[in-house]
Length: 471
Image (spheres, rainbow, N blue to C red):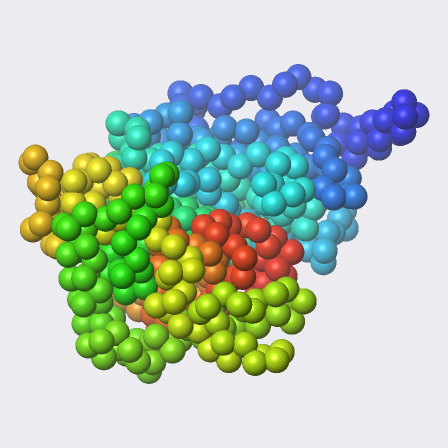
């Protein structure tokens, strides 16, 4: 064993002579130009990713905003495979000039997100997205991002930070040792999925300029190439309606212990379900509509996503029979019933699911403990109901920017939602995908069998998609 470790150490030193140099010193905001990437302030690391030994250089805690109100979160990490520092070095067909830049965020629940650190700590087993991405040949850049629990982390702080990090990359295009700044791919799940969709949909939108100037973001473009989006908690000012469109009639909710919705909640569920078709039709999604009873081509599309997920599972030998909401004929899944699906999946959140009547949801907190929908504001049970700023509500919704003049949305999208997800409605990512398709963008959307509210559970498939659009 000692001999094996010694051999590995010799190999690593040969690849990256600075491995045993002094530990990297954190960057400080009072540097002459804190937004320039110092090329020599890095450490070398070597880790096993699966059965593969991967060596990479790490730049830690680089400031990306000049005037951040939360300096602890004004930091990003850059990770670059060691192979790209040697003539002719390639990984997976990429080299230093062509390697895509994978930019995952760690945001959840609209709370602050820390930088991803390469490790074998993926809760689905093996390497996390940062380490697996490096092994696959990507440059990985991960920013810390403000969130709702910080004094200066309410909306729109998180999207301002994500944009500022992209601008930092463009500002340092000629100083980055590797990575193609025209091939930036965002990634996130839940509120982080909402953030990934916001970044992808709002490239260079002028509405964010005052906020970016306030934090001292670099004066660069902030559009990106592609967005990977898992179970996004987004379109917040309308998200309560599609939730009730699916879960109305299921009055027991499972936020912690099982509880019953009270009269106000049940009335909200009925009203929001009834309002959804009108909202859906107002979006003018090409070929997708609902009648006043909530039936139509959009419902067919949603049920079709569930059918496709079940068929894929059945083809792999999984048992999808006897669930009560799927119709299976031999080796073919032929139908899905949304009402029966809701009973099977169970409800997680009381109505309204996002803009709580008592103004105490995570999303209310994101908007500075205020309502952000007209329904909840009018029916509020809070002592002092208040409405969030209309501009902040607007700029937190990616749908408002898709197809808008002067905005450069990402060309490619991969959107995933677990079949067992009860945190939000499949209709939300489906609307995002259909809106993108209608505007001429490439949007791959699917439901995934056996998966709850989660993300990055399918890294091989995610990377296959990235390679398909980058090579």
